[in-house]
Length: 161
Image (cartoon, rainbow, N blue to C red; front, side, top):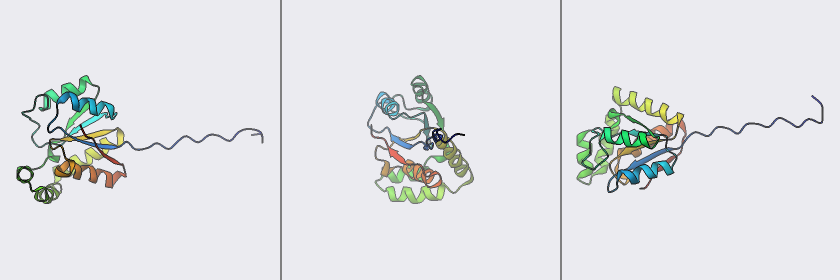
């Protein structure tokens, strides 16, 4: 190599994708998909224990089909959902009870396996955790996002519809 050759350029470091969360309370499927598309979401991770909804478009099959049409992958990780007593606590206005119940729930074998799966998926592409509550502070998806972030160092963004 001669002294006149320019030094090789270093490739920029790859940045881990952002972990996103979204709640669909008080909105429509079209608004959620538009928000996800604008945020460059590549995978929606449904973290509801029961992936059914009275809101049009948010039951598992309808949601997966609408996301597929928008070019967004879908996976349902049921064991990451909040157990019924936790959901009841949030409905009754006691999110602190849900948090305590969820922290106990997530230590189980199946929730831990699905949390590991969510970590792996979130490392690969921009993933968004979906649940019902509009306010992420009232929802277990915030806790899941924090657990993923603690393991990977990825930033968390809570999307607003």
